[in-house]
Amino acid sequence: MIKGLTITPPILGRITIGKVVEKNGKRLPEKDDQFTITSQVQGKDGWIKHPIDDKLRQNITSGKLRQIPVRMLFNTPELNLRAEYTLFDRQTGRPICVGNGEQCQRRTQNGVESLPCPSPENCPLGQNNNCKVFGRLYANLDDSDELGSFIFRTTGYNSIRTLMARLSYFNAVSGGLLSNLPLQLTIRGKSTTQSYRTPIYYVDLTLQDGVNLKDAVENAQAIHAQQLQSGFNQQALEEVAKLGYANSAFEMDGDDGMSIVEEFYSDTGEDIPRPTSQELTPEPWQSIEQGLRQSVRKVS
Image (cartoon, rainbow, N blue to C red):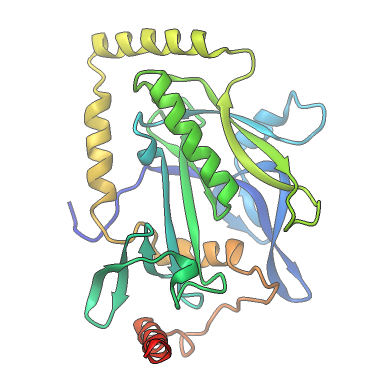
């Protein structure tokens, strides 16, 4: 296996609850109250919808796609949902620093170094929304490709916290058979003090409509017995996935980075321009070290 290349589940498309729109010559993120399923191809009007999107909307009277039937690829929750604090270089889209609140992997002039991670609120580089929690959920929507996935990316605490809890709970009550449960992604809304009573939308994970937990667990056990009889090795699949994730310090690459920066990191409403080759930051760690030196001066 080539070192430095993260092997993630094969992606067939994207699941979003928002999009990037152009206003007054600026590309800005715009939230939505429904799901959109797209391919990985962009046209002049944005991401091209995946055929599954139209298929799921056929029997919806409201016209809004707020539930998506899914199956998890893995029994281990952390293999389905990847989440870390992430600091992107907003000009190149490259991840500069990725951490879990204790340790981080950071690009420096000495290469990638393992350093303490105090969380964004306590890190001089991560404040002012420079660093955010960044989650990626891999889910199967199309049984014609049982090892393929659609990716849902989010920087929302509500979505990440809820998905983490649900995945852990469903895995526990099923006896470690999370991948055999009939699940669905569901849009939920809530109002907070910070939202000034305006609804904000996040993603939840539930059993599919009409299925109770007892029946879902019994069915998962039956599927597991059939898998063992056929020779399907779920445990080996999970071990290979763990090795793939661990093959590089950074799961995201520059190709996806600019799309992520556009979609999630323009909170101030300011435009994030696409840089020319002369404007690209050649060494992102230079600004990092400058920030660290400034913080040290303040402490001393």
